[in-house]
Image (cartoon, rainbow, N blue to C red; front, side):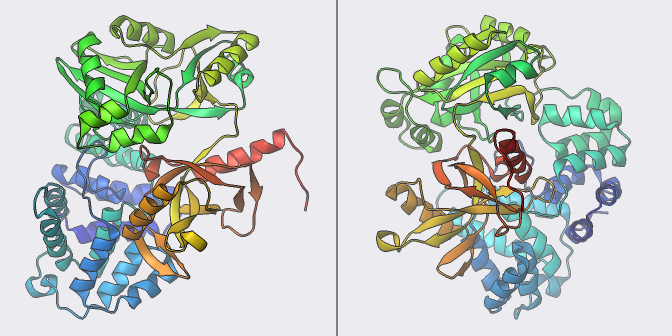
Length: 563
């Protein structure tokens, strides 16, 4: 019998009501065990707040403004009810549940009493994402309205959460991995390995349900299925990198560009951004150079794309982002903003995974298969003086700094650790999410130009504020930002707005200081936006745990004020 979407909503209510991790794992494991095989992946994705698997290129392309208008039409309720509920809960889904409970309109669910199932919700989401072309906006709205018209208040709560991608139950992917392991009696290390390769825990769960240990043991890379990226931790300098890497490290230039993952199968090439979004059409010259140079029939590579001027010198990151967003006028954009590719890693070659091969060996395999495509500038050294000189050369050449890589390090998708260390000569910037904004003063009075910045809590999924800034963006960027924030607005109040946390910005600051003003107990001093991170999703923003680590690390260089 098909599982109702209401059952998924009731599960999420139970998860939200507990803070005990083992209880969360037990609840989810029991639920997953009760599902049919075809329901597992959609359920796992939805429980984590995603409409589709993580690797999927499907997007719903619906703003909160559009969703809120549909909810108003369906319920016929005074939307002030929603605003009041949101003020109390600061949760879009919970506020949606309240307004549905106060609906003045008799919905189809009550008329026909047809249960909404998990599979039907997924099919509706696929239909919404697949609606493109002339009149698509109106068609999308009709599909969304049809879905919400069949939803109970509880179901509406979780539909909204899935639409905006903000579940906030406290259940993160690590706990979901443990739940999958328990549900299908598969060792946790096998689940983790499979998820690292496939890039989506929902698909791993479906495989475990259908085929158990044997199925997971056979999981391998698939060309054109993007893999989550290995991440680097920040280091105070090259000396720390050498110490962490047992006295010898491979240092590479850290370019001020966009990280890409490149897949090649025969003559076909696809390029994915660090958000795992397909950007192939925006970078035709990268496709061409890979097709002409890279040896091997099946290959997955990693590299950095930078924007350059006529003389080949790097130009600022924001110009590169124009290329990544471009879907029309590609040739003109390629002429105005030429790009250059540097390769730095290889994950897969002709049916063989290389992620467990030591880094230096992977680098050699990469060099043998890159053709005329340049690799990132690199030295392997145990000399502090040589490493310091190499850092200076990188900065002088217009790049950000260095990445130090442990010589024997494997490639660990999604993992941020000390095997790879970033070395920059400036204070560590943070990638934060805009959660609210206020209108400015003077000539900025009509623009949302003062931004509230937040980091993600890795434990709960909430975004915790670290302060505000009005500095860093140009007038043109502020105008565009105002337009985007208005589409994401959940609540307007006191000369500003609260928004769905979607936009990531890189933030520089002078110091992280203690502050009772904010729930996290910290605030950024002299924060200013240095660039808009179109290449990062809110999930990839910095966590409040990382901010706290940086805060504590400050006291290795200065005294701590005692209160």
